[in-house]
Length: 506
Image (tube, rainbow, N blue to C red):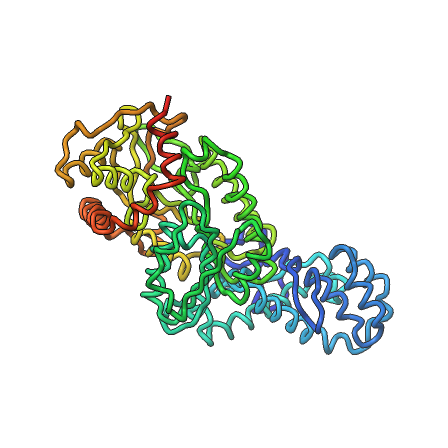
């Protein structure tokens, strides 16, 4: 293929040169665009209708209603005799206006444009014969020059820096789902402390694991808003997401044992709820949707190796299966609809405000009450542990500097057996092994998890800062000093669950 413009002139196979010499923008015409007071289901509809704005409003309406881009093209081509005589003079400004609107309205398109850096661009359009570009398809050059012109303006305005900025002076409004839970609570405190001009909306259903007392100190903070609602409820989501720039999706049913007892709840919240959020985010034009996921979607490891971003999913519990499904939905909204998403798969978190059904707070609070601690099986199951503040810092960095459409594995580089954790906690409270109560192992209990976080380290410069031995001492101290917080939780429904899960376990 020969490119006739001197600035773009080269030859060769498009696929062969794709990564090295230039970018081919193909299928960008499939994105919806607002233009000239109308919403066009694809920008191709807008392109084709623009031929007739001066000559035939009825044709414009027909093309606007066309079922597909190809149908819009066929209507336009059948009426080429109605194209205005001055078309050659006006077509480039019209194209530029449509492309500018596309870039402004779609963060994915903006991101891909900036990603081309200083490389040459052409746009591959199947319909440029009708556009009047001629048999040599010089329109690919003309369209490419429009994209490069806009890109240069963006660079001059430092739009890329603004787009990826970590500036604490910039105002953003972020929806946090599940913000009354353990990780969500800590993330809200982290973000409001680091970014005093950010506004946080916390949408939480306040199920058993959600506790508004976690965030009592923010009641009078003008930058914090709580909305009680269900992510499966469309009206609740629309209310919470209105005028937000970003969404960080923590809300999930997350305890494996509960997923074995009641899989349906996990399917509803983790899959259907995520789909509602994605659909509304798409409708409202959310600029970034970050999905919090787990390392458990990868299954279990042998004695060697670590989970990484290119590893195939192999979930083994109703919980991890529901999270795997939600990960796939998030990716689908990126690839199908261009929703600007990122995903993080994180290892086991620990820290303050964790619901006392999880290993570390369960063992700590039991020992404070002089109760035995229930240890599954032989206690040799291995997990990688990360302090919740390190997790928050990773999500923060991904939000501000992560690449749209990418997944990042986040780990603490702290592999420990459950038995090692047990002995650390016993030693902290000066208790002996007589306080261990062996209980039958969980069904399908994965033997080992570990995270390779080299991608986020190499690309974004992140790594965990909190040493596990120091972090767990601070965590155990927090539970020792906040007895009223967890004593209110370990009552009622939780007692029923505890008896069923550990006391009466068969």
